[in-house]
Amino acid sequence: KQEVTQIPAALSVPEGENLVLNCSFTDSAIYNLQWFRQDPGKGLTSLLLIQSSQREQTSGRLNASLDKSSGRSTLYIAASQPGDSATYLCAVVWRGRDDKIIFGKGTRLHILP
Amino acid sequence: DAGVIQSPRHEVTEMGQEVTLRCKPISGHDYLFWYRQTMMRGLELLIYFNNNVPIDDSGMPEDRFSAKMPNASFSTLKIQPSEPRDSAVYFCASSLVLAGELFFGEGSRLTVL
Image (cartoon, each protein chain N blue to C red):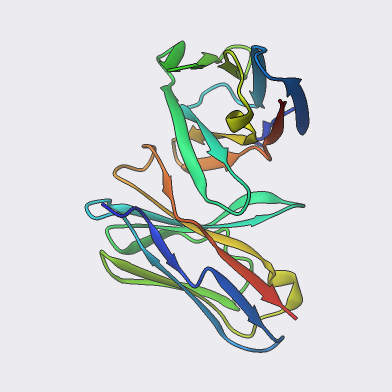
């Protein structure tokens, strides 16, 4: 059974620190993986999409890496800012006889000013 | 483009009433998804459409839920009759391709009393 797990569920970090958010998945035969940000009361905003053939993607202070063999992706946030406070979710896509898109439950990040 | 547009943003209704949620996807996107988000279960895919045709409705909880997409620019999710356990935030999302970047609406927060 395909599952996506994000640990920890919540994280508090002082402003300015670099941090890593984790996403684990069963079944390494993924098609791609996407990281999202969700602010309270809002929809999800796509941050980065990594195809299965890629090892990492970068956008500004964000860097997402993918290690299929170990079933892991990490989202690295450099020089964290209070505006980075939000919930971060990853979504994994498996394609084949049955296409599946499964979201993790997210990590709620709080950047302390 | 204005992005994915959902209405209503908030709906409070009594058990047994019919609820209709609406979604306008991004123009040109061939895929439309309906998700439900709760604290306990996270984000769950209910159904998705490709070119207005329902492809996978295995996530629809039960027969009380139905979804339609009469044209490329409009979709509805209907719950009849509604129950308190249906209380959640319902998101609509669209994408160009099945496993492409997902764009979410702001969500419809449903409370069933």
